[in-house]
Length: 286
Image (cartoon, rainbow, N blue to C red; front, side, top):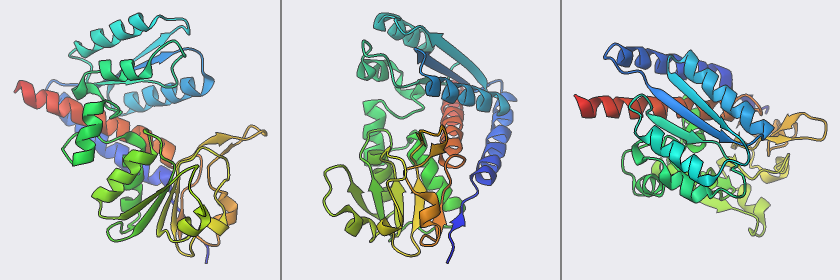
């Protein structure tokens, strides 16, 4: 058996075409969805992500603003910018790129973003709504993973899903979204004992740990669906996921490549969240 490599480009292309169509419909009502991205400092990877997000916005017909602030920008200035964007009716989504410099509190920055413009779903209120199943934005990467599974026809309900990683950005919300799809969920992390025994029980394995090629065939049950959220730069300069891609091809039934699948889908969900925020704002004014 050889795994089917999930065609992320095809999935993303179809999804973004639908978003673009909905953006055009909204623009005909006089509303153009707008996303503001704030980046502080000179982290090269962050600047790449921000460029990709801005480009995706423009291709979808959305309004995009990027604020590049120096590394030594005072926290008060960042909070003042967020306050200004909160009040800007042309902006429906605000994203502050992490990591932030050490002198700036990520917690204070996240909590400063208006709940209705928190398209990353990092604000404690939106995280709480996610937990109890209320309508609202879902974190972009975990929501993207769910959409990928659905697009390739993977049945989630009743399956045993194992998430490797417990970060607030991916691991924890990933477990919640899988529960909402009626999977039985196990979360593994750095303190998990006998991890291979647990991961080999997974029908669906989500790797989000941040260690290059950590997951190999010994972790995988034959026929499991493997989704690789990790993106790591090797000493050679090449990018690699948390999964040893070549090693698992003969064991898994489906596997996502890195790069080219979960990353672009994450940006696609960001566009969807911004679009939906604009739709809610338009409904509120009508």
